Structures are given as structure tokens and as C-alpha cells.
Length: 251
Image (tube, rainbow, N blue to C red; front, top):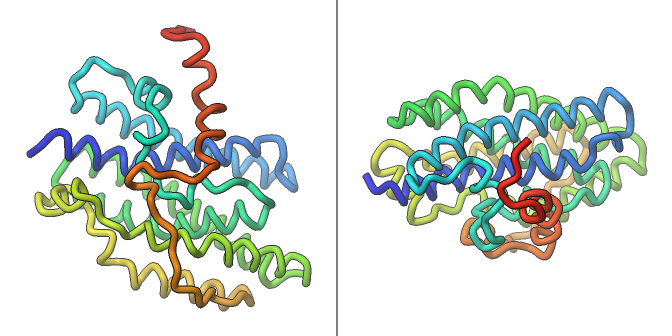
């Protein structure tokens, strides 16, 4: 097994959780209600907790004496392998819940597959995370239905979010070279195998929420290869500020 491929495979999973966790963390104290605010913050903490486990393992595999913090905070933008969906901004609450739901459905399917990985560490992380991600999907899906089948204004805003975010969903199923190598060794999960299941599930909920399923066939991709949107640099500027301003700081 090539450690570099395993390292890159882990980053492809972990970076999604880190960046989405950071996005949700931006909303702490800004939720529409206290309960929703706390729930969003807890989801952010869940995602970052999962990220820590992945990065600790990745640092061990890399064998360069780096820590989880080095991997999280000291890489350049092009070194992050997250999909474009998770870095999209918190335009309004509909976008937050739409982005979360579109990722959560994929994330749960991925975790369920990863729980059967030949890599015992990845399987253990996935088994621990399944319960958390199941809650994430239920929470975000309920909000998509609530907003879509709510008032005329909430329906319009939820539809706007789904229309804009839909174009980023197909990238979830792209396979990198490292993905393919890990799949061949029984370590990785072939996300393309559950692509139809993903879209069937999302489509069913959108219809239940009185929302139109976007018909566009044009999809944007690039994040998995390190080619990110204009939003990523600003996000990393906030995320990495302390570590870059005060190198080697210790609490």
C-alpha cells in the first residue's frame, strides 16, 4: 500500500468536514433561534471532532513529525481537497440548510461504506461518526422541508439555495487517482456506486418539501484537485489566522 495515496484519500474525506465545520462555526450566535443556533454549533463541533481523528491518523501515516494542527492550519489553499459545495458562503439560512442537507445525504452514505473499510482506523472513525451524521441529515432535511413547505418567502429562498447549490453536487462522486487506488485495496469507498441512490433520496425530499428539482445538467467541480472557489481563500484567512500570526503557539 502506498502511504501517499492513503494520506491523500484521508484528506479528501477530512477536508470536507473541516471546511463545512468552519462554515457552520461562523454562525455561532447568529442562528434564527437559540435552539437552532446551538444545534448548528454542535454539528460544527461534530464535524471538527471527526476531522481531528482523520488528521491524527494522516499525520501518523505521513511520518514527517507533523501534528493534526499542522495539517489543518498550515497548508496552502491548493493543498485542500474538499469539494466546492462545503466552502460555499452562508448567504442566508436557506443556503446553510440546503448546503448541509446536500452534503449530509452523501456523508452518511460514505460513512456507512467506510465502516466496512479494510483499514481498521478508518472503519472505527466511520462507525463512531455514523450516529452523528445521521442526526445531521435528519436536522438539515427537516429544515429543508420546513422552509420549502412554509411561507411563500421561505419557499422562494429555499428554492433559490437549492438551485444555486445543485451545480456543486456532482463533484461529490468524482474519483481521484488516490480514491481509485484505495478502492482497489478495499480501504476506500466507491462513491460513484451510490450516486443514483443519493439523487433519488434528495429528489424525494425536495418534492416532499414542495420544491422543484433543478433540471440543469451543468456541474462545477475542481475542489478535489485543489482548484477552489473565490470563497476558499477568505475562509482559510479566518481559519488559519492564529497559527500563522503566532507560529508554534501553545496554550
